Amino acid sequence: MRRARSRAAAVVAALLVAVTTPAGPAWADGVRDGQWMLGFLNLAEAHRYSEGAGVVVAVVDTGVDATHPDLVGNVLPGADVEPGATGPGTTDVDGHGTAMAGLIAAHGHGPGNSRGLLGIAPQATILPVKDGARSGSALVEAVDWATAHGAKVISISQAGEDAGLLEQRAIANAIAHDIVVVAGAGNIPGASVEYHAAYPGVVAVAGVDQHGHHGQDSITGPQVVLSAPDIDIVDLALNHGYLTTSGTSNATAMVAGAAALVRARFPNLSATEVVHRLTATAIDRGPSGRDEVYGYGIVNLVGALTADVPPLATPSASPDPTTGAASSPPTGRSPWPIVGFGVVLVVVAALGLLLVVRRRTPG
Figure 1 (tube, rainbow, N blue to C red):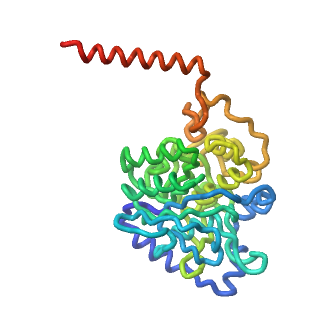
Figure 2: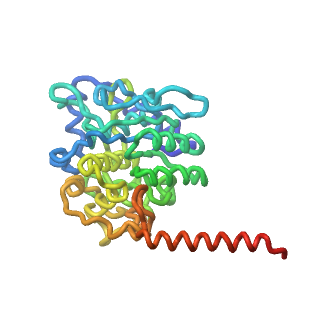
Figure 3: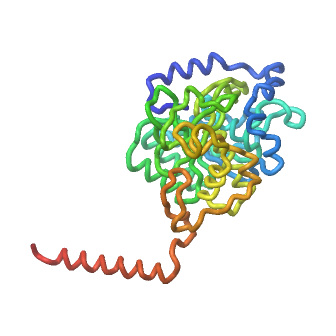
């Protein structure tokens, strides 16, 4: 997880560079073998049903290197919304955004794309929105830009403090526009689930290891919705290379990829129903039901793509799958019958009249 405004950022960057390996023949051939999450998530079976075709996933991060062989053709120009910047989001001097894009939509390279990295949704399209992995105004603009430019999933592998009402409104606006917003819970030593994952309606993601146990670097808390692999994950790196990292950034990207798979297979499902399908089919771990460590459980790709999942009961009373609380329906769905809606309008009008009279009454 990229921590916004973290004093340790330079140290983290140095560690990533230290483990980066050039894309030489031996490493390239061994990348798939190193991707333990492929078998863990039964990705080959999941790809029988969906590879994410036609779904645009916005990666709000440090930019994405669109020239990496494992991503070529899967990356749109995007945008750079850092203060004072102009141009696309397809430059990345840090590598974090490229790594996340790879876990979502890398298709490999070589004969039959059999070499290199394979992402969760290799036919999805990445929309890179470069905010420099920062909070504040850049993040707000990044989310707003992604919302306005066709994203169906927004992946945010960064965390920090609550940046205030503008940021919360940007996230809420994206969700209101039928977008699945996924963010990492954060990495220890954080004490609780961090923002942006802690905002209502966001799919907050924790991590697990190769045995399905809670990732020791992953923060826990009541906002956790799903878990996914995050320990010793092979990522894309700059200079067309690869690296191995750990952190809830990785898990976040995988859940974003899972959302893309579901959106491609069930294009008429609302974002709320997509999240419901992911949570309803998750593999429960820890105490029965939702808990602060795994959320609803470990994401289950095949289950989410094949299970018979009844829709949420009614639009007006549908529980938000990320919180369990009642939520408003997505844009385009009427929450009330026509008669009920008329009653609401009458009540609102009456309240408005009372307010006008009260304001005009001296006192």
